[in-house]
Image (tube, rainbow, N blue to C red; front, side):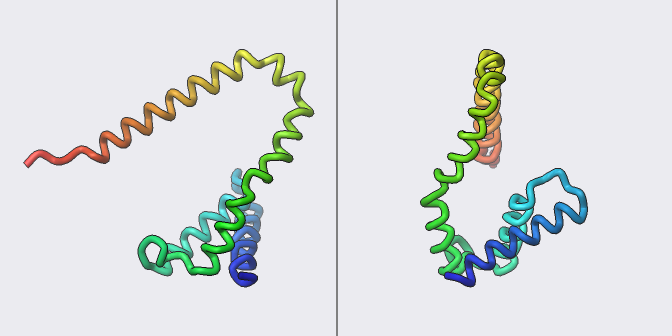
Length: 119
């Protein structure tokens, strides 16, 4: 499991290096996750077979504690509570509209992808 965790951190480090080297406007961990995904695709296999057992186990443990990662962000938001409360109506409308658009785009994409061709 140590090797799997080291692999995850190595992908994150490589992602940070790529972002800084090419001045990408993306977080390094996102690029690192893409690198890990590319590695898994290159390994081949289907479904669970594509993911090494140790990597799957460590990923499951990390995902089990994912909610803890939102605590610092939520606490940090409280620093800007006055700005958030001053723009509460605008933020609420934006959230509702973007959610509706996301649902509509997802539904349309699903309908397009599940259409059966006519014989």
